Length: 93
Image 1 (cartoon, one colour):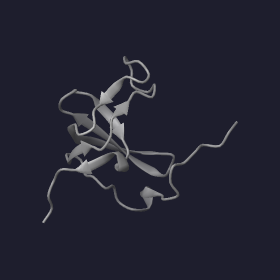
Image 2 (tube, one colour):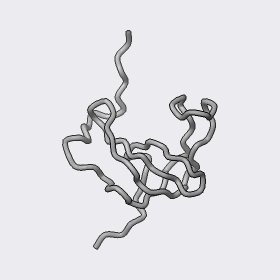
Image 3 (tube, rainbow, N blue to C red):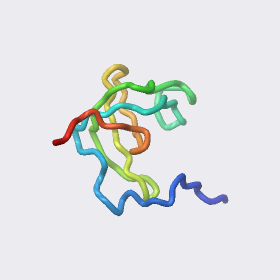
């Protein structure tokens, strides 16, 4: 069996999550179904670049990354996203 490919040497879990529950975010890229979204074909677009949503859950992946469950307004889909796939829409003083 091959090794799991990690796309970064950074372990995000060493610090707090980048986004809080309820944070308003925007997708930085188009997200397609990788086979983990039920009821949609592999490769089908789930989220379009620029689509806005809210963080509804925070989990982890590979003991390295936070995964943010984001409820997207336009599509109504809840999709798991990495920090690098999102940008915040909230201003902090």
